[in-house]
Image (cartoon, rainbow, N blue to C red; front, top):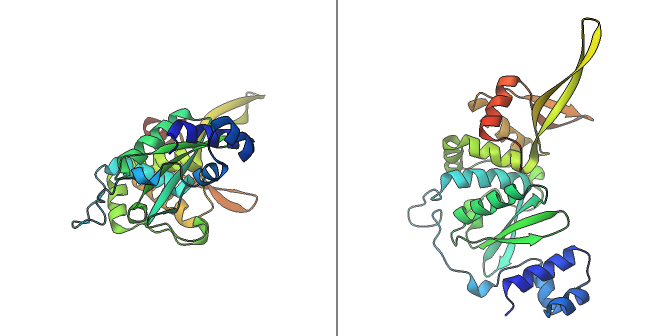
Length: 258
């Protein structure tokens, strides 16, 4: 049985371009073990068979609904679920190395929602995957299905709509943290015969799925945030928030990634 430090170090070496042989020599782990850790980092025997609020007798919402609303936004943007053996699944959320605060916040949300309270991190080229195993991810994220998200319908269940309605800013924050950004835009105007440059902040949310973009804009509507479609190269994949009052609202509740 290899400890987590050995597992993480081996995967980091592979992500840096080392071969399986090289990573095996450096860590003492077998090549087959390292190969299996690419899809399963934590040792399954340690996984606890914990109860799930959704498939329990009461069919309740997850205990931490605010964390769930945020994690739902992250999952719809940069998350995926894959089989993990023993009837369980792995939830993976990809977080860019550029935003260490986002990685920490994502891991905290995963641990708050995961019935086992656990998560791991796997370093890859330019990003960290926050990974967690559970037998209940399909209960908690029924949007999972075969194929890419933008190639299948993405519709929230009534209980998910209630959670997003109670925690809309957390949901939008998860969407922006996954597939959005806050940038400084600029334009020029002629004032008194002189052309001057003006800068202003702007939020973007970009997603290929019509359904996911609609979930974003519907939630922004409920929050009083003014948004517009921003079509580029004929693709209507961008949602823009540029009006001063709406940007101020977004800054108060979301702000730049960090």
